[in-house]
Length: 122
Ligand code: FES
Image 1 (cartoon, rainbow, N blue to C red):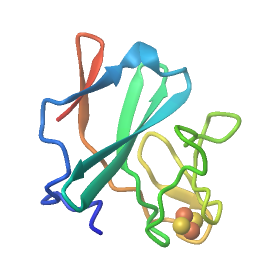
Image 2: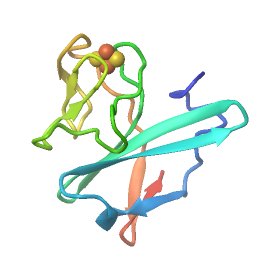
Image 3: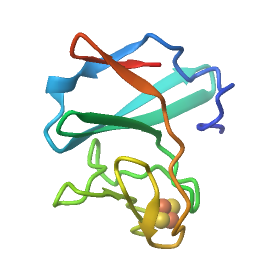
């Protein structure tokens, strides 16, 4: 299963509205799944204040999805992204791993933009 390839047919094209910024807590996160036949694309969005970032939901360590529970991508403090697999920690604004088995690797960005308060694929 390919989840992080830009040619994955399940990956939504640019212009798909995901949710409103206001739907996310601050700080907060939310996961999204898209299917096309047997292919799946999984991505997630994190919000810190006015900053919004999107990442492919695949840990650079072993390729597992990051969230152990739906939409729970952030640590309890909300300041870092946590992989539930083996507890890697990532900076939310650039996706760089700062602790864990894939230190210095980074999450794959999922380009997003905000249009009229809606988070939209870019
Ligand atoms: S799969 Fe994320 S830390 Fe191992």
